Image 1 (cartoon, one colour):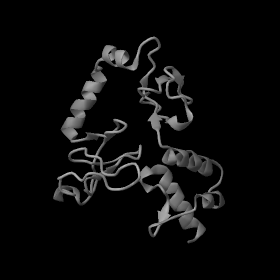
Image 2: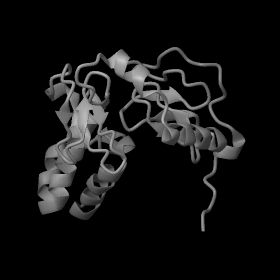
Image 3: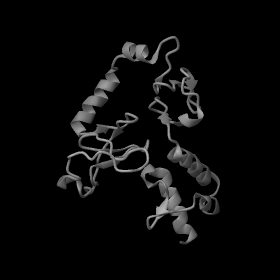
Amino acid sequence: MCKGCLAQLFTKAVGDMTLWPVRCCRQNIDIGLAQRVLHGHELHVFVERMKEAVAVKKMYCINPYCSHFLDLDNLPEDHDAYPCPRCATLLCLACRGAAHPGMSCNEAKESRGTTEAERQLQELAERKGWRKCGKCGAMVQLASGCNHMTCRCGHHFCYQCGTQWMDASGQQAQQCRCELWQEDNLLEEERY
């Protein structure tokens, strides 16, 4: 494979977590090759995304203008007021929400209730047919293709019913009874 094509594969993987691990012809590509074909900022961004792709426990900053990735494998999970390294929003790493010093995670969840923005998001999700990832709670949208979804947190699930698609070892989990696809979703509509 030429350097240009290799660099393009690595660069595309930076923007699409479903392309991890980086591969060609169903063979994983040695990540060490990225150092040969990417340089400067491109290499730095690739390395950061690689850390995100391989992390087992992931969290993203709750600040909607930030959404910075946090690798919980390398952070104390019981920390209830951890500042986001990018925007300094205080986060609770245990419940993956806003910091709540002096309150348990359950107490904080009960006292917070549902905000107007959360209600609006839920209404929009229902109108658009979006689903929530069962692992991290992120909203996902099926634009085209089959019902097998891969969230950016790495969780595989059925878009129709939410059933886990694969277990932690990568083996197919309990299969749901949904159709693998709907005819309307097979082809991506042209968008102008």
